[in-house]
Image (tube, rainbow, N blue to C red; front, side, top):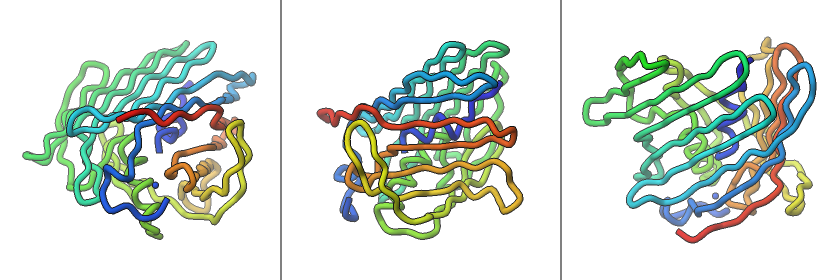
Length: 234
């Protein structure tokens, strides 16, 4: 059983167009109610955090249910409204198989060191390449800027993958912290795909993700809905 990386990382995905990234990103802690369908349906909490660490930002996620635990974080910088990942880690413990992955970006050489299952290797990365959390930050910047083209190159699983998204309009989403007019975005996997992912971003909350729904090819569903939100000191 593999908990979708997008499902996990989409948690950490601003109002008017910002002049600087420091005006865009605000440190926060968000708690989401999560539902997993793995033949049986069960729930748990997921906690997403964004904080400042010197000249870097750190986004992290921890999610835990009865049979699974996932911890993920990304360190990145922002220059000229462009997110540049520096270090990424993903750790999963689940019945049937654990997974650990570490990515270390070197922008002087244009490479990333991948260490998955303690088998490191290096591959080339082009400028603008993201990791599985940092692209969510770039997506927030691009939505705030009103961009219509939302396509991201992501270093994932030892490959450079393309993640395109489509804006579907706005919907009212009711949560434990209030109702919000949210921008609904869909991961574009092609017209023949039986796997669908939808994410709702709240402009009123600096485009933080407030809801996510994913339907797998098998028909199993995963969902997230924000339950608590606290903006913290820098």
